[in-house]
Image 1 (tube, helix red, strand yellow):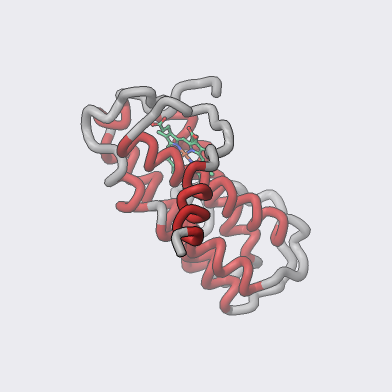
Image 2: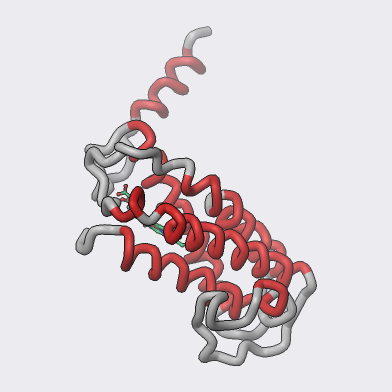
Length: 171
Ligand code: HEC
């Protein structure tokens, strides 16, 4: 009768896949896992949307919601002051908290716009080209009326912009 329990425990003991951040623990590990989740969701979204044509709306909405849920305050909350052990976060995260939070919020807004665009079933072909943050490009509202690939590109740009400014180089 104990067998199911043993099997469950066995599954828990299966080592996690090797990852670059191996040594991190606690909140640093949590945010790294969260970032990896974002990366996987963005991969799904890119596969669906990069053609600029038809896409599986349900799949796009699901993945965009994952990005939305894990950005904004859900992201900044994972960077409490002093959480630097085995981390690649630069100290600017805690000296330019506004700049950091703005990028996390822009990611949330771009992901929400992407989900709305897919919900609207917007299929006008992606125009290519537009890769910009909101300050320079279309607003989230405009993005939600375009092909979701446009919002995807705005989201991807927030990832890169934040990493350029707030994460150590190299992996
Ligand atoms: C507001 C800033 C910010 C945004 C936006 C952001 N990141 Fe990050 N990301 C970071 C920081 C800082 C680290 C380093 C965390 C650490 O080592 O403690 C990081 C680390 C990562 C890592 C490495 C995780 C690991 O295993 O060590 C991946 C992958 C990643 N981000 C993907 C993404 C993707 C994909 C997006 C966009 C959908 C994104 N990030 C958006 C700041 C951001």
